[in-house]
Every structure is written in structure tokens, then in C-alpha cells.
Image (tube, rainbow, N blue to C red; front, side):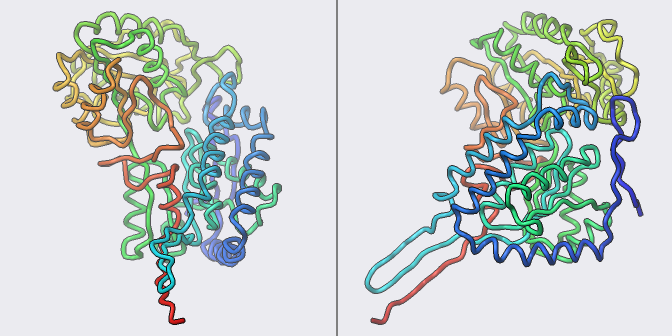
Length: 461
């Protein structure tokens, strides 16, 4: 059993932080305290819960530059881009703004004879297993609405961002959230699976790998615990013949390479109308070639190391496999002397690619993108759907009707037009196929974090 969790910084390969894992017995005790606290919390007025959660969000934002530097050390994002508080606040504020209406009873009859209504009741204890790539924003997607809805939350963060859970809990507790209600936990996989199998949680939200999602489903089998799973992705962009080319290049390349390509809904494959293909590729290569790979603590760095050397090894292997099968890399590696064969990985654009290559089928989660020409919408739709994942798809056209027609045929959770790599809190964040199931944010997010309870009262006087 692993007794200590260690965050290895991608900056220098050294241990940046470490924490001991909790025992199964201590975890059970923590959960008992959370369950007791949840009853009192759920009984508080909704307005009071909203106010305290929002105060926690503000306290988190006040941590400022300290968080930015810490993230650079833990997962390599350049400090020049700041932290995640803008996105955290946008999502939390939106969910707070709709909470009263989203959680309001559905009254089907209120007459002299009957009162019939459906209410939303909190699940109880919600287990949030958060990823490292956007550790604050992905966690807040569930933490904020879960607490607002009256649940207790147990937060387990990825080892790569080991300190994030501690910061979130500290901020919320200092703002007035009961300490037992929102707790950070350090667990190994075996203890996590044991707790899930014991039905210790009333709802589980996991963002991570397909393999991790399968392990959670296996552990939860037979417990009937509801799950929200956001797993892998291989999100496509399709640039049509009437697209604004410069805008498409700028947005799609940013979507492919920002955060070293480590974005849940990052662009991993691009299909371009034949008439625009050559020009798109030329502009895309110029865009990528201007990036500066280096130490994320340097304000001049625009692309930092990948979060872990083993993640970079996966991307290098995909690039090598593609080139052996005929692909060409158009970004000159000499422009990126910081590429050390380890976590620091130069961005790459591949052409002459096809779907026999792993780089066009399997999640890369790194700074590489393949670009293919297509002759028409039909071919583009077939290629976009030729994938086992389905999180988002980005369509580039000046014709909304065309985008809607194509979007209806794409197997995905979100369809963008002239936008990419963005999470809109007013819309359900969801996926299909091996990307997972369930949905976060929006009214549906509140519905998933509560259960319906019906009241059928017959009046006799």
C-alpha cells in the first residue's frame, strides 16, 4: 500500500509536496462526521447556503499569486496566464444565480382537494475526485452546486495537484462553511475503492481517465450509487469553406496547444475544407512556431512542461508512430531548445495523417494536433464520428443553419460554432461514448446533485 502521495514537479523532477494517505478506519470516521454535518446544513435556508458558498469562492480567489506559482510548480502552467479564479468565479456565480429556480419545487396541483409537488432533495455525501489539468475549475463544477444544494462534500484531488484540495477547503471553512461539511482527503486507490464498494458516498463525480472511470464503476457495482463521469476526449475541429480563416487558426491552435495541450476539451484533430487547407496549415504552423517553451515560472514562457514525464512520453510515442506511418511534422524542433526529452515537449503539427494512426484516434492530452483535408461535410462528419470519445466538437462557418445541421449528426456532448475549448456554465457539461455519462453545471447539474422526492397530499377538510 502507498503510504505517502508525492507531487513531482515537472519543472525540475523534484518532489514539490507530499502528504500521508489516510487509513480506511480514519476515512470512515471522516465520512461519519460529514454525514452528521450534512443534516444540519441541508436544514439551513437556501439563501444562507448560497451566501456562505459564495464567500468561500471569494476567499479562494483572494489567494491570488500564491496559487498561480504553486500551480506552475505542480503541473507546469506558465505563471503569465494567471490562475483559474476567473473561471471558478464565473461558474460558481452562475450556479448560485440559478439555484433558487433550479431547486424550486415543481407544483402540479395546489387545490382545495390536493397538494401535489416534486421537490429536490440533496443526495447526502458527495465524493468529488478531481483532475490535475484545471484543478480548481474542474472541482468547483461540482463542489459549489453540491454544497448549495445541501450536500456534504469530500474532495480527493489528483496527486499531481496535491495541495489544491487543502487550499479549497481552507478557503471555504475560513469563510464559514462547517469544517466537517467540506473536507479534503488523501487516499490511495485501494482505500478509495473500498469506500465506494461500502456505499460510503451518495453521489460520486470523477474527472479523469477512462481506466479510472471503469475502476470506479467496478467498485460501485451493486451499490446503486449514482455516478458522474467525465473521461477521455479527442475533440475535433472542422473548418468549412466559408470560415473566417484567421479567427479559426487562432482559436483552434490555442485550443490545441494552450496548457501544453492538457485540456479536457482541447482540440486534438482538425479537418479543413480542401480549398482552405494549405493556407490553414501554413498559418497554423506560423502560430505554433511563435510559442516559447520553457520554465513556467519565467514570465516570457508561453508553453510550459507537461505535468509529468510519462505524459510527455505518451505524446512522443504517438508522434513517432504517426511519422513511421507517413505523417510529417511541420514545426521545426530547433525552435524549441528547451525540449529535453522529458516533461518539456515542443509543440507539433502533423499532416499527411489518417485514422490508422494512434494520434488521430487515441487521446493525446499534449501539444500535438493532426490536420486533414476533407472534400465535403459528409466526409467531415464521418471522420469526426470515427472516434470512441465524444465531449465537444468545434465547427467553423458563417452559416448557423449549416452548423446546426452538421451538429445534429455529430456524436458529442457539446457543439461549438466559431468557438472552442470553453465551458459555458449555463449549458450542461456532458459527453457520450467513452467520454462518460452524467452532466455538470446548468440546471441539469443541480438535478444530478439532488434526487426527486414526490409529495401527494389529499386534503380531507
